[in-house]
Amino acid sequence: MRRVRHLLIEPDKPMKNGTIESFNGKFRDECLNEHWFQTLQQAREVIAHWRRDYNEVRPHSSIGRIPPARFAEQHRRHADGAARRTPVINEIT
Image (cartoon, rainbow, N blue to C red; front, side, top):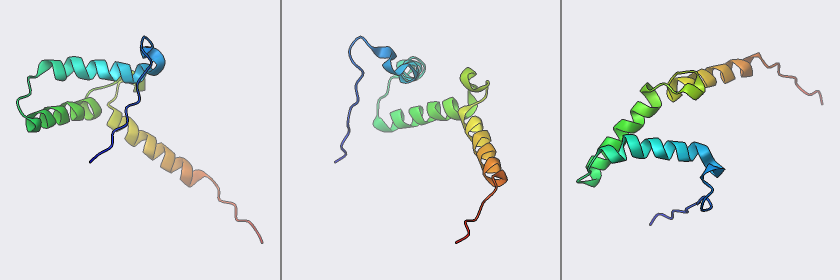
């Protein structure tokens, strides 16, 4: 049994988490409202395809008109490069 904990936004306060509300609206409009799922397997496949498109293909304006997967890769490379450039100071005991 999986325990799911719902974290709800207060009634009439959707902007307490505008990012999630925006994502939920896109997901509902672009995926859920476009399909009539007849099986759980079909729902999983359609949603997985939508998720791949959303994360790996579609550009997002908030991150420079690139897909989130590419943004994450650039961020990882930048963080790795910064970590290599940071001097390591050994403490003398």
